[in-house]
Length: 310
Image 1 (cartoon, rainbow, N blue to C red):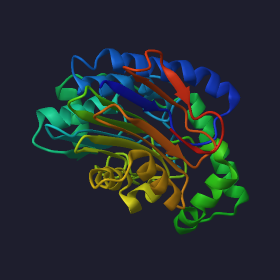
Image 2 (image 1 turned 90 degrees about the vertical axis):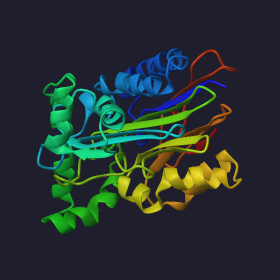
Image 3 (image 1 turned 180 degrees about the horizontal axis):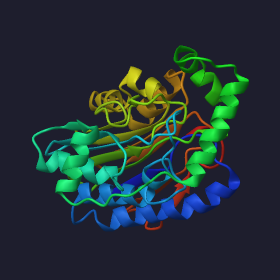
């Protein structure tokens, strides 16, 4: 059964930003669903690209900046059968990192590439580039820096020690990654893209480009995670979710338990090859849009407050 679910990131969404973001989220689900018969990998890629091209999500054009004002974007795409894995780390000028992740998976002998080497591949395949640092991203970083100064954070170690407390106190400054998971009834594909988090040190790598952490698909199950990457990495959240489903745990139960177990702000979307779709989150919001064969219209969830829902 065909199905797609996309998420716009876990966190606290302001009313104005959410108003602009939800139509884009719906568009991403529509675009992805329309391509499922052609190729589920392309469906996920194009759905994520819609989100990367919008300034309202933390990916591509809307990416947040590292604490020094630099831009470092990550992405990953995984198909369960036949196996396909591609990820990119720390690119700065590639307009759509999810497309580069797909090229790495399909056109090279590697699974993960980073930095300048990955950008050479992007240029080789003529992927669009651009200056993706926006004025909004600069203003948001300044607000984060102001909060850090109030917390009297003086060095890198103190910065890392204060990160989670800062996010809990000022969640409106932190919106997670974007992602999509889809199936054509045969294969399951998951894709995720992010600009990271505003308080990250240059060079920090989160969960998104780590296969099995922020993105995974296996044995007819796929998942994309969002939130604080360190917590997702510690649990290998998406791989663990797929494994539990493979061993008989219901999809809804697996997603909700893993989100509940982490002490970090996180969320996850997941689906199975039979079209079953779930999502769970422990943040104030995690806007998602889904479309299935049973539900012809795109439905939006995750904007009603903190909870785990299916």
